[in-house]
Amino acid sequence: GNSVTQMEGPVTLSEEAFLTINCTYTATGYPSLFWYVQYPGEGLQLLLKATKADDKGSNKGFEATYRKETTSFHLEKGSVQVSDSAVYFCALPPGGYNKLIFGAGTRLAVHP
Amino acid sequence: DTAVSQTPKYLVTQMGNDKSIKCEQNLGHDTMYWYKQDSKKFLKIMFSYNNKELIINETVPNRFSPKSPDKAHLNLHINSLELGDSAVYFCASSQGRGRTEAFFGQGTRLTVV
Image 1 (cartoon, rainbow over the protein chains, first blue to last red):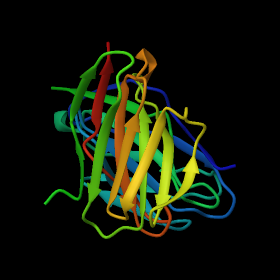
Image 2 (cartoon, each protein chain N blue to C red):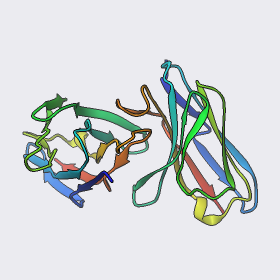
Image 3 (cartoon, rainbow over the protein chains, first blue to last red):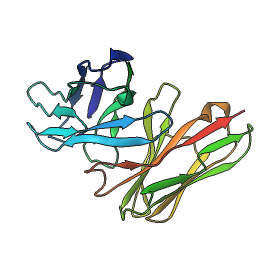
Image 4 (cartoon, chains in turn yellow, brown):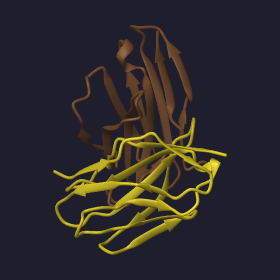
């Protein structure tokens, strides 16, 4: 079945550093791919999505490209801020849908 | 207006008690979910409902009983609470049986003592 693997954290960066959080997937067909963010004490919010191969999702300076050749959907940001400190989840719906499968989450800590 | 709202936000209770968590969505979505997040932040689907019909029950103990009185509400009742039930429970909704993104509530932090 479909699955998603995410790099383990925590990731600790200085403000204005470049961020990459790796996400790879296995899937039948070409499901939509998502990145969610969970700020401390809050629920999950959709950060960005891509609905087909080669699509690039972007939001709040974050980007991720749906790459079917490498089955990846890595999250990147050119210059992180302290306010980006959160847990990031890669997700996809399995075949047959009716739910989302989440990666294990990657905690990002950005310090001044 | 909160899109997906769940109550209470915090719940502390003793082992053996019965408790409920309520969830409501005002997005007009057909599908609602309960997810459990453990202390390591790992998220796992518990239940999925589509138009009040149970679609997914992911090997959750039968002490957990979801109820969907209408497609805007999905409540979770838990009987005979155990220490291992301590977690954050998230309600979510989506349109189209999960083909699109899900919208999450703020979570209910359940602590069983």
